[in-house]
Each structure stands twice: as C-alpha cells, then as structure tokens.
Image 1: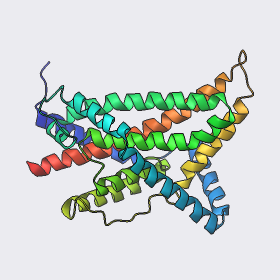
Image 2: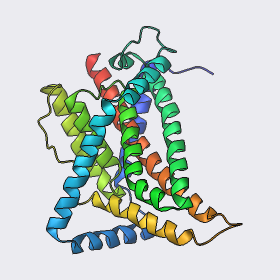
Image 3: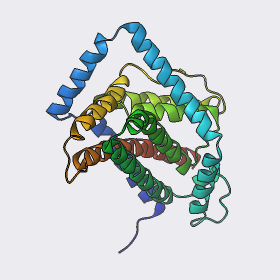
Image 4: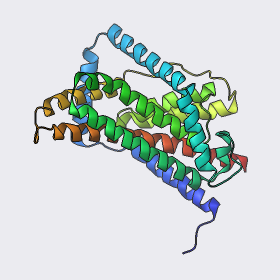
Length: 283
C-alpha cells in the first residue's frame, strides 16, 4: 500500500483537527445539559465574595503548582524521557525545541504513548478514591488538578514548546482551563486561546502581556463536578460486592479517566495545530 507524501499527511491531519474543532460547539445530551444548568443555578446562589475567593484560591494553586512542577527534578526527567523518545526518529535531537524538527506523525506518536500513561494514572487514582477513606477523599481534588495539569504540560513538551518560557507557562494554564470547561463553553475558549497564542508569536515570545487570571466562574462547574463525584462515590461505597466497594471503584476510575481523556485530546490537538501552522509559515 502506497504511503502519502509527508506534506499530504500533515495537511490531512490539519483537516482532521479542524473537523474536531467543529464538534466543540456540538449539541450535548439532554441529561448533560440538565446537569450543567443545575450546576449554574448552584453557582449563582453563591455570594460574589465567596465565588471571588474560590476563584483566587484555585488560580493561585494552579499557578504555584505549575511553577513547582516545572522547576522540579521530576520535570527535568520527563524532558529527558521525551527527548530520548524523539531520538528514535532523529539522533540529533538535544532539546525540547528540537522536537519541532520531527514530523507531525512522529510527534503524534510520542504524544499518544505518553497520554496513554497519563490516562492509566488517572484510572488508578480514580479507583483509589472510589475505595474510600478520609485521606483519599481529601486528596482527590488536588490530585485530579495536578494530574491533568501535568497532562497539558506533557502535551506542550511533546510538540516542542518549552514551558520555562513565561508565555508558554500561561498558555499551558489556559489550555488546562479551556480543556476542562463544560463542553458548550470550550469553543469560545479555544478561539480566544488561539488568538492569544498567535499574538504571542508575533510580538514578544518571551514575555506575557495577556490576562493573568486563569479560572473564571464558568470553570467552577468543573470544581462542583468533582465535589459531586465524591458525594456519589460516598454513597456507592456502601454497595459492597464480597466486601469490596467495586461499583465505587469503577465509577471513580471511569470519571477520572474520562476527564483526563478529554483534556489530553484537547491539549494534544491545540499544540499539534500550533505546530502545523508554524511549519506552514516557515515553508
């Protein structure tokens, strides 16, 4: 079977991403719309000061968590691991930025391998939460946020974007924000983020001059989803199968897996599209 030229494969991939974008504004199922409306009503019952405080706390948590991870040995080891994977295709790769020398298909392969590991981690973490216990319950929310923030960071690295760049740090946080929004709000976030990324390339790549607030009231729906999940898991833990809360474990694992799958797909498409557009401009 004949293979397509590299230019045609990249063009085909770009069309696939555009097609996926169109689905962001697609209609949701009736029960999902009802759940989202219920969350909106709950959010509007919260006093403004409490909502503002919650937004600020979450913003600071994500910003400091991102900074801590990016300056840790753990992140350095992840970079080395990605570079080693890239050297399978090109022995001259020595830095994250060098990954842009690879083809879209090669970068997509590296990304898919690493995202599979992230989804497995999310599956395990959700299953442990479903088992129950005060410590597991209390650690679930920060664990979910950190694991999925890390998913976005790895996606950026896979396509050659160095997150030690202040602009890229903020873009990664906004990718996390957009990817974890309710489905009907993701299209607007995607368009806004693309415009910001394009402006960053044209002006000052090493400086960030956009909005520094990451989390907004709409995103708080995700926070309430996680709290709702914990309440459901607490109820399901009482349903034992041979002494094991199997239904709770499966439900917790499935919820976390689906969220990480959504975020890894969103982040992967975003960074891959940036990579493809940059390659077109450089030709």
